[in-house]
Image (cartoon, rainbow, N blue to C red):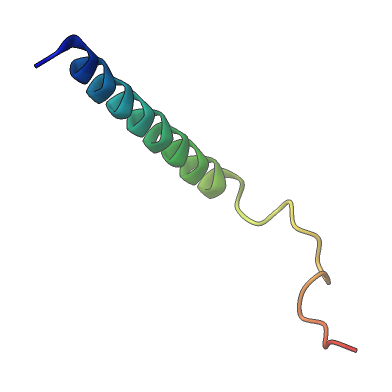
Length: 48
């Protein structure tokens, strides 16, 4: 295989690893903070 192909595969794997890491971080942060930042009364109103 050519060096360009290996570099392309490495780039794709690094991008996937980055997005998986960001997803894991967001899920952990969401569990940690929960729903405490949302304002009450924002949802549940009937449309006019």
